Length: 226
Ligand code: IMP
Image 1 (cartoon, rainbow, N blue to C red):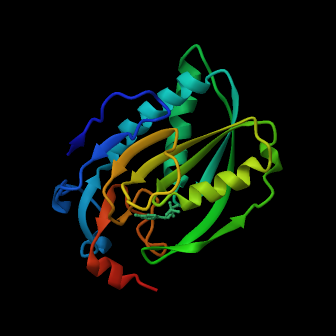
Image 2: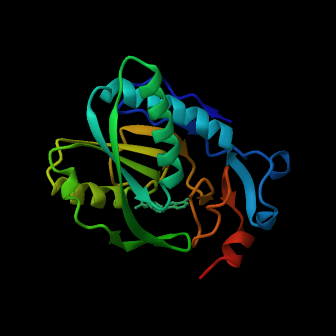
């Protein structure tokens, strides 16, 4: 499926590397909602593997930030499932280990995609006032970083509220030539430059109700195009 990736210092890891020639798992080997039967090409990352990787990221975050107070800033809508699962694991670790992490959770909603294309406009749909972040340790949690434009713009916005520290956790980072931003501090998987859906990642609001991360098919793109 993928490289493990060379062990790297946290803060620079590209996560689990999924190669360009990885064909994915055939759909029929997994369960998925039948309404998407014609709309997907393959399962790129099964739900169970996402959960296992999330557990490890939560441990890394705990060991770096444990005993601090943090504000988790969930980037909606694509980051909601990853954020929810990550927070659950951190909560469990806080209950069961010596160290604990006091978390507040807040949400920001961004919009920059139409069909499968990134648009130049980044809209912060709400809330724009993030003064709650002033002087705080902030962990931004995002589902996918593609060109990095969204994250760059969001970071620029967040620092205007003068947080004490900002870290970013991204479940997926796409391997794109035009990538602009820097890598998130915590990366789940580095994936090929293909349009993926599921686990809260959407194509025009569809596919959030799919547990695995899958590659959308051309039929799927046509069917749900706006
Ligand atoms: P960027 O600004 O190019 O990094 O785009 C980031 C945003 O684009 C993410 O927050 C997603 O909303 C969306 N996005 C980029 N690639 C995908 C994809 O493959 N599937 C679903 N959403 C994507």
